[in-house]
Structure formats: structure tokens, C-alpha cells
Amino acid sequence: MKFRTIACGRPLKLVVIGAGSMGRGWIDTVRRNPDCELAGIADINLDAARDAATGTGSPDLPAGTGAPELPVGTDGVELAQQVGADAVVDVTIPSQHYPVTVKALEAGLPVLGEKPVAATIAESLSLAATAERTGELFMVSQSRRYNPHVFALKDKISALGDTGIVNTQFYKAPRFGGFREEMDHVLLIDMAIHPFDTVRFLLDADPVSVTAEEFNPAWSWYRGSATASVSFTMTGGIKYLYQGSWCSPGFETSWNGQWRVSGSNGSALWDGDNDPAADVAGVDSGTAGNGAVSGTTVAEPASMYDSPNVSIAGSLAQFVSALRSGETPLGEVHENIMSLVMVEAAVRASTTDSRVYIDDVLDEAHRAAIEQESHPETREILASWTSVRGALAGLPQQARAREAPAG
Image (cartoon, rainbow, N blue to C red; front, top):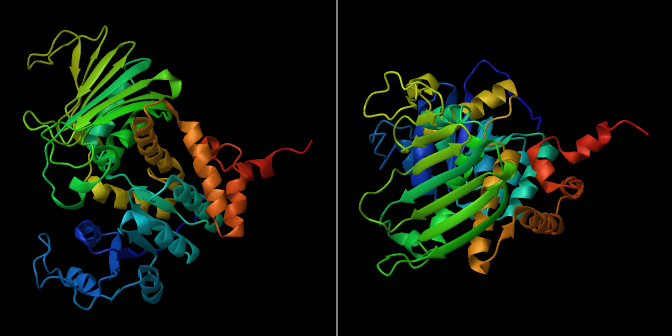
């Protein structure tokens, strides 16, 4: 999608909306980025915004070293307009992602938002159409893509020939307390979007259908199902198998999970924390060492993909770069929605004990988005999408139709 760029020789002025724990992380990240200027902080709790401005309670910003004079407010979009901000960073709760993003885009403000895109797929589709209508960038931060090992693994996969199977195993035992331990579908909804998004990036593939099972061991301290087994069929016939648990103490995996990718020429492994390795047929093991079996090649140092900007710092850096260059970033709303769809489809497959087809989920959400949308031009854009999958994958079909040759 084409979007408005911002050409200026100064740092971009950003307002962060949301001053909770994640908001504090974003505030500190904006402060550290030399291409950005923190222009204001908004939160429905004005005291929280003031505390975030001064650095009160921030482990990364000692008290007294903040900016007590920084503008604060309860409405982030109005604050951004008042201070002449270039864009906003939305770190509100998921139920507020839709109204905050619509208001910002309509005010001419690009948005970098925390995942998920919105609370529902229907709202997410409306946000994609709103971004088309306004011509403003809406990017969703999938911060775990900004990991040098993920880029190294993607490079290794390119040598495996035809990819057939991808496995992720995720076993942790965190005791969060609070809302997570009371959530339904807690693992799938609160955590699985990270590996689901990562596999799409690694394979340049999207989901076609899914089966899933959720359950809770007798010793689980979660009310909802904290364990899941999920099988996706991806485009190209690739199988993606995810097994995970949030109540499995002992021999815990990385927070990124453990990955295995199998192709026609070999396999690649990633433990989630260190450089991935590949075992490719016909490759001399050379000086792999470290007990490597014949044919194993250890990944080049991940520093070749590294930069000072990882995790949310990577998201912010790419958002700024996209606004300068016009190059579509990772996480642009159209590209990102399928990751949320994978979560919704997996939950539905588990709940109904059936195979769920992704296009059925998209079509249902598309109808709901058209019905719920109040802006006539946004509704018109949504209605022009004869294929939701096609609209999310490339040039909007409305524009495609205008450019089609006559006759």
C-alpha cells in the first residue's frame, strides 16, 4: 500500500498513547532513538502519564532524569495535534486499538501500534481499509521479527530446497498472576501470535486451514487451557506444527520456542536463543566442530544481520524508516492481519473440534466489517474486496479494477 511519507531533516515527533508497563517500554525506546523526539505522553490516567514523563517508577530512567515539562493528556490524538506530532505510538489495550487508530489516521497521523491489530478480525479489516482511505501508514509491531537469529534462520531455510515441515515446541512455566491466569485460551491468544507471525515471515507463506486441541494438565494454575497442539496447512502445502504449554516446569524452552524446519535438501534447527544451524545434503561439514554431525553447517554469526535495533526498537526504527522512504515495512496492517487470523482460526478449531478453513474465517469477518463500518468510503473499499486474501496480500482490488484495461 502506498502511504504518505514525511520528508524533514529533524527527528520525527511522536506521542506515545498508553503509560502502562508496555507503554513505559515504548517511551524509553522512543527516548533512545536519535531519529525520534518524544513529544508527549497520553493515558486515561493522567497521573500515570505524568509519572511516565518524569520517569517515576521506571527501571530504565531514574527518577529526576525525565522530562516533567513534557506535554501529557488523556486523549492521545488530541495531544498529538496540539503539539504538532508527526505520528503516534498506540500502546493501549486491544479493545482500544480500533477507535484510537481510526481517530489518528483520520487526523492525518501515521500509527505504530502494539499487537494485536485490533480486538477482532472484522475491526482489523476495517483498519486496513481506513489506512487505504486516508493514505496514512498503520504498522503493527511484531517485535520478535526483529531478532537477528530469525533472519539467520530464514537465510538457512533458503538452502533447504522445498520446505515441507516446520515444528515449534514451546514449554514454559511462568506464574504471571492477574488476568492471564483467568483468560480463556490463554496460550493461543496471549502468546501463540508470536510464533504464528514468525512462521509466516520465515516461509513467506500464509495459512490455508488448521486443526487444534487445547487442554489443561491437572496441576495447571491457569483457569483456561494453557496447553495446545496446533497443525496448520500453509500455502504451498507446507505443514506447520505448534506444540506449547505455559505450565510445563523443567527443561524449559526459550521464549522464542525451539524450531525445526525440514526440506527436500536437509533441515535447520534453532533453539530460540543462539545461532541456527542447518544440515544440508552434500555440504561438507568442514570445520563445524562442536560435535557437529556430517553435513552440518553452523550459521554464520548472527551479527551479519544484527543492528542496535532489536525487539520494539527494531519496530520503531523500521516505522521511522518507512515514513522517510515510503518502503512498506514489516507489520504493515494488510500484511499483519493474517497472523491474528491464525490465532482466531486455531481457537475456533479447538473449540469446534474441527478443521477450520482460513478463507471461511476471512469471509465471515469481511461481512461483519462491512456491516459494522460507519464510514461510507471505508465501507465502499471493504465491499470492493472480492477476495479478502488477495486484498491483504497486495494491491487493493479497488485500485486494481481502476487500472484494468478497458474492453
